[in-house]
Image 1 (cartoon, protein in one colour):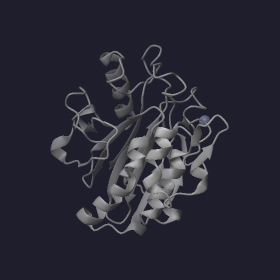
Image 2: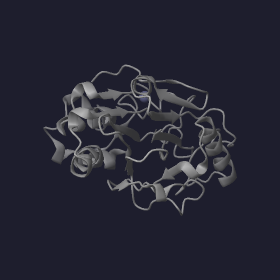
Image 3: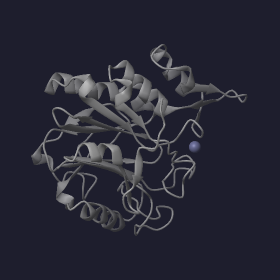
Length: 274
Ligand SMILES: [Zn+2]
């Protein structure tokens, strides 16, 4: 797995995958930082999620700042509910604005969003979980998947690839995937419960994914696991890029659920066809 840094600062508020956005001028994509927003501690300051106990007014002001910088409005944004599941949703123009102002209007029960329609900003929210970005560079399809350990083990990444093959006739060699900033193998300690959930996937991932510790627990590298599962699903290794940023190591830049004991904000991943 190559861990060259694929995201660079665009503004204080967000990073962009410079390689992708240079190679594909039709694409908008990025990942927010925790900087430059209006939310108060412990959501300080650019919290983008409505479900964490922050003031809705602050969250909407932050989201407004984000969409303005992209030349968009909140009516262009679409959010899923995110339930640590593996359901995917095909976003159409009629869905625009869902979840952007209220949590109730988000697309229920889904952790993955994709579309082949332009001018729809797909967004999802994170504090340590793994953001997966997908593009079909031939057919111009974009997608996002929220992969915590449950979504990763449930293979939400490979599921997106299968869905695109069925629905659009995508070829895996045309699909590129970015694995965004998230908790690294350096910081993600888990117990037997998580490791036993990985049993059915044995043989589908490399030894680096699980590192046993003397205390009977394990360090789990979720980025590597997602990478390995996507490779198993037929995505060429050269098409998968992985961010080196660990959200738990870098709470100066990112929110981390683990590091901040659950009391923190959420970062936003976003992707759109121009
Ligand atoms: Zn770390």
